[in-house]
Amino acid sequence: MHSVPTIETERLILRPYRRDDFGPYSTLFADPEVTRFIGGVPFSREQAWTRFLRQVGMWHYFGFGFFALQDRETGQFIGEAGFHDLHRVITPSLEGTMETGWALSPRSHGRGLATEAVGAALRWGEQQFPSLKKTCIIDVANLASLRVASKLHFREARRTVYHGAQVILLER
Image (cartoon, rainbow, N blue to C red; front, side, top):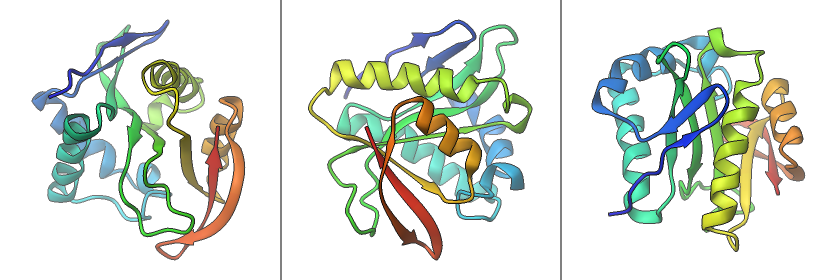
């Protein structure tokens, strides 16, 4: 079992998930604004639980995964950021890459927190897994996430369709 590091930034703590994060986690993914570009439908509590366990379990098999994001000032859970390898059925395949992702509560939007969190995760990922390609997949209409990806030096590799949505595959 790999241990999950804790990373501190100016405004955030990126840390392992705790079981008591599930309440705010399920609330986060029940929000239509959060899921608008993640399947388009709010998650049920059951679906959120499955995703939560997936995020926790990713560390066991890959040595990387998603971090819970905690606001340093308030101590509140505000989202997640990190990496996964989901074995998506998509062309080109993202298997074997560190697919980068993030989701933050709407009250945290527009403050640069996604860029701060993902930037910290990427620095860790580059240090721990320098030979693995860092990728991400973003809906073409998700302009905010495309801006975050651009700031973090992701560049468009290809456009494709995933689960009926037009998406952009990006690489660093």
